[in-house]
Length: 151
Image 1 (cartoon, rainbow, N blue to C red):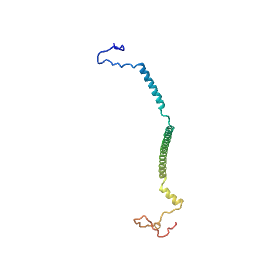
Image 2: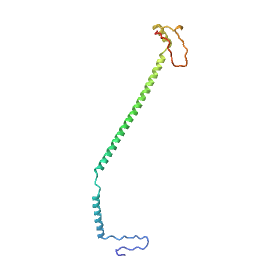
Image 3: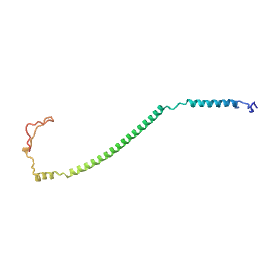
């Protein structure tokens, strides 16, 4: 046994015991630790009102930006849905127009039109003397040489 009452162990794997500090050293360390804590408490940085204001301003800016983003995202979604709705309405109208056009073309009969024009409206077929022919030059202009009759 050694001076502290510990058993001495031979070999390299034996633990090396550290000497225990005395009570006076421990009390001194505790006093120093308490004094250090007091010093740290005194040296703690006080809250700067400007820093707090900056934090709140940053938070408010982030919140406002988030709300604006959500509003724009909602408007974009709403507009895309309305575009899809209007596109489907256009497709339906085009189908309706196509079916009406086909019905109109099916109802047209040139013989019926000719009979109605000649018998009910008093029109007559065109005579050869009423047909005016002209030579067309490679131009899109039309020159007027005289008055065009009203009838």
